[in-house]
Amino acid sequence: MGFRKDFIWGAATAAYQIEGAAFEDGKGLSVWDTYSNTPGKVFGNHTGNVADDHYHRFREDVALMAKLGIRNYRFSLSWPRILPEGTGEVNPKGIAFYNALIDELVAHGIRPFVTLFHWDYPQALENRGAWLNPESPKWFEAYAEVVAKAFGDRVKDFIPFNEPQCFLGLGYQIGRMAPGVQRVDAEVVPMVHNALKAHGLAVQALRRLVPDCRVGYAPCGGPGIPATDSLEDIEAARKAYFNVPEQAWVFSVPVWSDPVLLGTYPQELLDRLGKYLPRGWEDDLEHIIHQKLDFYGQNIYNGDVYRAAENPQGWEKVEYPAGHPKTAYNWPVTPEALYWGPRFLYERYKTPIIITENGLSCHDAVSLDGAVHDPNREDFLHRYLLAYRRAAEDGVDVRGYFQWSFMDNFEWGNGYGERFGIVYVDYATQKRTPKDSAYWYKTVMESNGENL
Ligand code: NOJ
Image (cartoon, rainbow, N blue to C red; front, side, top):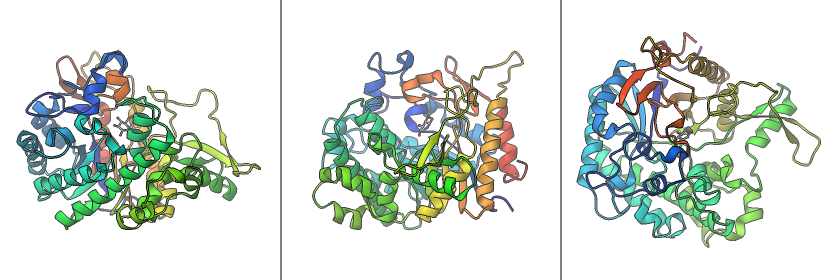
């Protein structure tokens, strides 16, 4: 027993984080171009203008992937590279770039998993109100149609959204990521609704135009981990995981996943904020938003521990003890998140699970011997994968795992200050060096996780 025979092993990236060529070949601006080129927004004033220069080096990168045994690659398309104004005229050079990338992947036996939107929203549409504009779902639908028609002959696995919690919550509520604005709930609620409608329309468009495709999702949210194996603590962790917090409600799992997979908004959201939903929302839920998915993708990096408590909510958070292991980004190391997350999600949404992102940043450097030794990454991935395998063995329908990230890249507000890759990138020379973990991960993929 272990992972199923056809388990999907892979690695992931996103357009803005690796491509560069931000102002080349007719690409339109995204909110991240604007934001990162505004002084003071990103650590060290780093930008994605060049990033990993993947736009010019994709052949080298795909060859390296193949050499490192990667058979499945999740990457995103830059919406404004394809549609410079976000809607309307298509940029032929943008299409040509992705055609060449996809062809290169297929030629190397690598299956493409395409994310349509990984945060680099077209600036032109931002200027028209972004997700607040009632037309915004249609814009995304039209973009999905262009993608389906251009690439659907070779791409069969699609993920419309990456972490909607973050592009809306961090982008428009907390204002800590592009476009960096702070809106009130009366605006954020309709934005969420429009984004969910956009998702639903995109799923329908992809299925209409690529009938043999598979469509998933890649939201986020740190799983609840029970403090002990008692039924009470398990229930406490489950409740906490699917709770809709009063302040950080945009970041919760059920706000984004219940509508799509269950066809309902969580009752807490309706009670508190339902008054801000646009007219006709029930109809939208039923006819557009509620869409069966082929896989429930989830990005998981860490979780929080909970135990049962005698308070109205029935749970309380347990703080990690002093000295608890953490990553270079100061994120706690919590392998159990890859057991309880998939298990709780599968119980609630009854949809096969793929981990669409998991990994960590380490203090990586090229050693005197020319290699990049990253035992912490290997140990981290090993522990998380053991937990994930245990979920499989306990009957959770887990279908795949994408390590984040194939190579070091632009970590949003933290610029190049965090290294998540299994391939090291020297940004001055653009030299790629596979880290030790890349060679180790290759053996894991080859053995289908049997060597863990
Ligand atoms: C989530 C995001 O999808 C990805 O873009 C980011 O780099 C990683 N997590 C790490 O923070």
